Image (cartoon, rainbow, N blue to C red; front, top):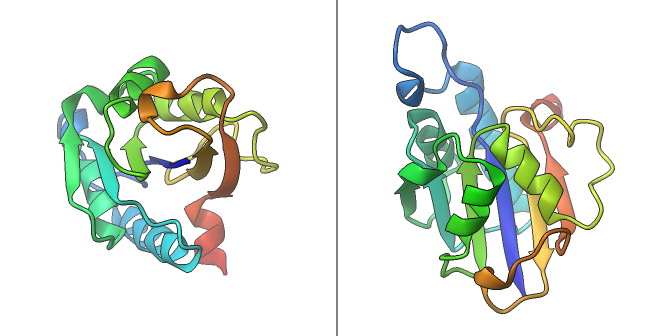
Amino acid sequence: MKRLILMRHCKSDWAHNLPDIERPLNGRGRKSARALGDWLRIHSHLPDEIMCSSSTRTYETCHALGLSPQIDLYPELYLADAQTLSMTLAGAQGEVVLMAGHNPGIGHFAWQAVKTAPAHSRFGDYPTGATTVIDFDVDDWSALGTKKGTAIDFAIPRELLAR
């Protein structure tokens, strides 16, 4: 059994004239990432491996979660499509892997991964900070297939912060 936590980076800051890959999180994004970290801990969705896009905003999102695994940066995950995300995940070593990336790829990958989408109105557009927890009945990440995962949980920061 493998568990995948698919997370879109939290809200980024557009106030600076920076290249896209260097945009940091804004204040709301930092709060959202901390709330997602709390949510992951409360629900025992704790990764033993973190695969993160090399963008500043995805790294800051992963760092602000406050989780213990090392954050491994993957340049190929920056603005990656669903196929690239899947190919990169095939090399994962952990039992529970958190993969942080960008839309539209991360949202498409979530749709392709699950047999049945979570009953949440925002799953389809995968807003900033959207996080899906998916279980796969496989022994190795390279054995993943389309529509093979079971969605266990789904959260968006806006709802977590409203509690």
